[in-house]
Amino acid sequence: MTNDISSSLRPALVMTGLFAILLGLAYPLAMTGIGQALFPRQANGSLVTESGRVIGSTVVGQAFTSERYFNTRPSAAGASDQGGYDGLASSGSNLGPASQALHDRVQADLQRMQAATPGRPVPSDLVTTSASGLDPDISPEAALYQVDRVARARGLESEALRRLVAGSIEEPLLAFIGERRVNVFELNRRLDALRAKPVR
View 1: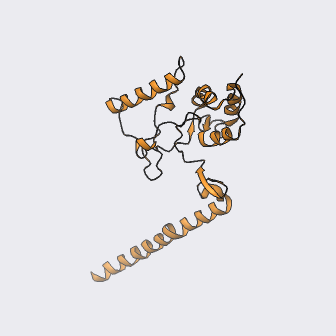
View 2: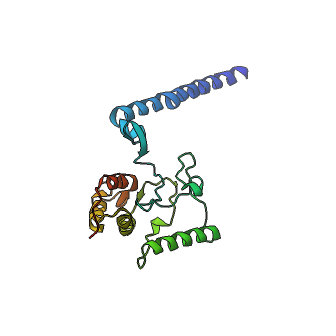
View 3: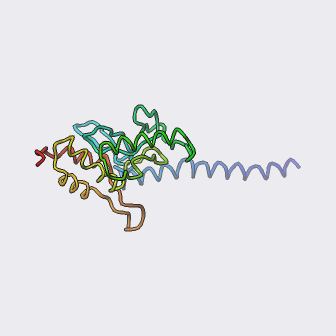
């Protein structure tokens, strides 16, 4: 009986140890090495540096709320009074359609946006959060909706900003995977590079 147990236990322990080494060490190290060799920028978080200082990432959203910038969508990741977008607190709000808190927040956002851009319907992604709370993108419609507000705040011509948005639209991968989108971080970097011109 003892021999039967030991003869059954030995291969189980050997296989457990083998797969722990293969899948717990060798595979992750191989994938990390391949990622660093072939896609070093993406493997390290797609970080963007300026004057030797990291200013953001193209794949992790950050809060832009100034009138001078294109705003991101709301985020439930982190404290709402700090704009969300806390990379250590990635999550959705978990508020359902019957939630009064969600209704009040959406209504407040709608009123604020309609006051800044009256007479136009607000794109839904400007008042709804993403599942992760860290979405770096908005729809082209959401970016174009903000053009007049940003143009007024910066003293730029609206048409110049519409061209800027049009040039910032990313198409779906292979023309069918994903949706057309605008990376807000990259758009605002291009915006800062524009020279202000008097509005005619």
